[in-house]
Length: 636
Image (cartoon, rainbow, N blue to C red; front, side, top):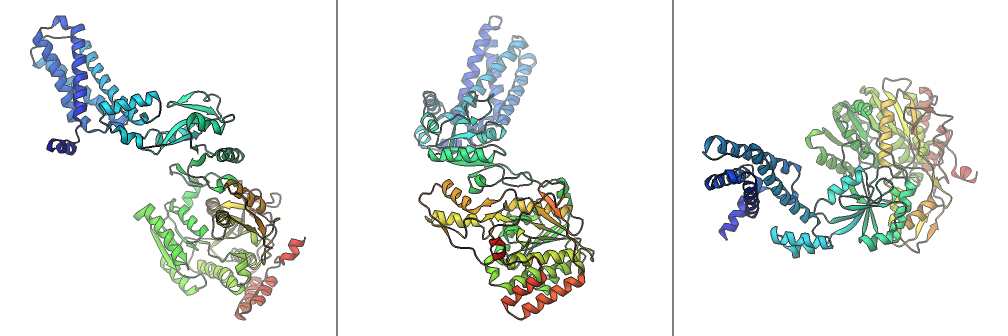
């Protein structure tokens, strides 16, 4: 018992010492008998063997070769062993040539003998590692490997066999697919066993990668994956896989009962992130996906700057914090009225960056100008991004006063403080609902754009705004609502089957906001290309199908107050100026004068003071000429 405990403490594998000794003695006998044995007397014969054995085993002990766990051994372990045997050969050569009086054999024979001993030792280690990796495959060869493990590796075969691994296929036999294989296929403790690859490259189809055949992506049959390879899951490991093909294969595999996962770099990252294996999201199958657009030029703009993000705990605000944190800013100030959301993003960034990121959180409403002033005075920000706003359309229809107080006068407070405290750049997050608005929320955001435009003509701060449409995954988004309704068994509710909307991911929208701010000169309204519109009825039907639901009803509930059947087309390339990014355009509008702005603001101020929501709505119609009633637009 004590000996066993001592072995565990030292970590020395004495069985491996024994196997290495047998290999060394066996090869020495063969070489000395057939390649020089006739020239040696018995004592020299024994001396050569003993010196080389002790040199090899002794140096391997010195290099901790016998403390290595070879089932996880990598190239560095094999290189270390080769170096140790090189040192052992030098010791052997010096002893038998210059120190011990012994009959000589040729240096070539000594090199060949040492090389064969090293080769034999490497072979048993590689065989052990391969057996440990592949020994649980239910094949005759797999069972032979299990026998090797149990006989020579002292592995508990029963426990080894009990670890039932999930059989998977990797779609994509390129670099990403092989990276995934190295991650899960080379680790015997992984819960997955790779059975085959699937790829469209004719040069690869029918060939083998790490012992796994490559099947043709265009002709494979999901049922055959189950019958021939026992595949239970398929992992997508292809960059920028075409959306239509991804969806078609996903549906084909899902119908056969094969689970699908995605292995890719997280959406819209700025570099440095490792690919991750994750469940397929509906968004992966329904919407376009953009690669990272943050480049060194944009990084350089934010690097070393103090950046204040209002609404920093919200969907867009928190993603802006994540993106800017990657750009090594001097400081980030998260400002929000909701302490829970601000706390969440603060803790997330602290966990990721620790003390490398200078981060502060301020809980204050943008309607509190004195509180905001203290923040500006304390931190002297270089860049201010206003992502704080009430955005829920139906709620703002019933809370017009709050919408104007927060969205309009909150924005005014921020831009006035930017002027007062010498901020170099003010950036505002706007919305497609500000274009010909039919609701209070859209009208307030349009008013914010007019404030920005007016201030761009008179102050020192450079101002810009960025418009985009619906953001996937944001608070109040339709996707989470549909998911909950489908998971509950339905029905799925939509306000009108004719409604269309534009969609963009949070990360994509946030990065485009940051890029627009970096390229802004002054007074621009940047417009993001949202791609093709999505019919909400089609979205609901697709989600029901992709989630594998049955007999889910879709019910119309009627348009909500202020709701349009469609959002305005943001990008009319004939009317907008291009930028260096194909997804960003500039809507150059003529700013209103400061006198006109002050007049409009006075109308809104009087209306909000009256505490009459309907009066505020009518005041908005006076100051925002494009504000129309929804029935006018929807009937047309």
